[in-house]
Image 1 (cartoon, rainbow, N blue to C red):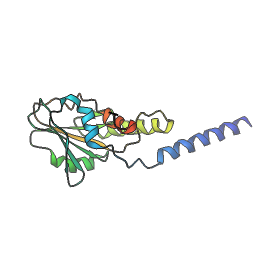
Image 2: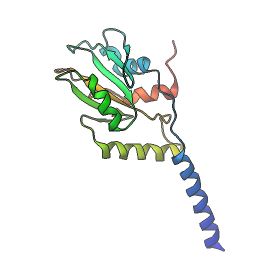
Image 3: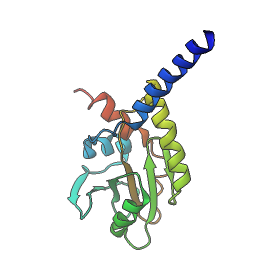
Image 4: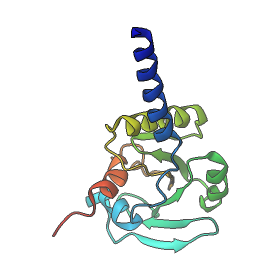
Length: 167
């Protein structure tokens, strides 16, 4: 009898977690200009602007210490989509990929997959600080600019969960 209760409990737990892991990700995307402004903060010398692109919007953020604006594009968290968006990358720019608190300067498929699995598990357990966003940022930084590597990118996704800051 005891094994039957344990089995029923494990089956219920597996079904619950399986259901949460298989639910489609949220289709909402944080308001990109507000979210990017929150990440870059006082480094910005002018407001972030939005330019329509072929696959996604391209955000242009003028940074005081950079010779050209930092470019960012929200894309699906696959490197197939990111390769398409990489066409906006200017010659000589350094590319970064950001997803929640994960940042890489090369298309690290396994690193991204690991982070996505960790996030899905945290969401299923209800301990994720994020709101199920299913996109990453492709970031193009001009030569001599060193903002993207150390920027607090998780703010981009946390802002979406908590909403824009009040007045």
